[in-house]
Length: 360
Image (cartoon, rainbow, N blue to C red):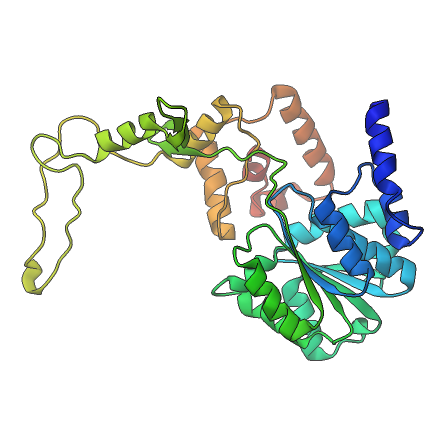
């Protein structure tokens, strides 16, 4: 619960807004807007496009949410685009909570729900396809929120974001959100060329602290430490550990860095004898997760770039015997899953890999 002083400060900041849609939107929030949020939201209210570059956790998504709020309250449409289906599903849930089920739809490659709602969440590829097909759903579109817009620099998928920016009708305001645009001013200039009047709003304040670690073998190290003067430096213990694993040992080198160069392998470095002492091997995935668990860093997100890779990772953890839930939580999960598949014949459960799924 806020203290009287905090409530007073919040009220003072809200008085800065007039009785416009932004003022009413701010009143629905449980927190006051930061300066960069206010600046970007005012840009949207004033009818201009905006690029918002802010660190993860700074709250830039509230600017996109305001655009959706504005669409609902001005009789226009807003499309909220994300790079992947998982983010679309999460954003759909967030906007339903804010705007109501009847005002929010979802369009992904395999899902279509309430697609004519004032606010529709979708992957960027879906919007690109709609533009090329001349979909009637584009009628009345006023805003497009492009979350994680830094994907425009992606070698393989960036063209999708670029094509959407270029081909959207001139009347559509673009709200571009990113935590990782390093050349925001240059990017904003390009948006100005292809979208017209565009503001760039940048903040480097990181309200959620960022701590970096590195894992060497099975041990987790802080990436940064302090020297004798108290200055931030790369952790000396980490450097020492890396040096101990990469330095030559008696009897040869720890690593065979050789490779064929020339005919008949001339130039190949001789394969060393097995060195005495420890050799470096990256920790198996299960040991990485176990180390994170011991350090109190779970839950965590690990990036795996294919469905088969995800399934393989689960199999690795199962083979390791890892358990990340309590016995009570495990029983609850099993009971829930059993209820959900009660209508499926037993012989079919084996076909869909039910038992491995439940273990996972």
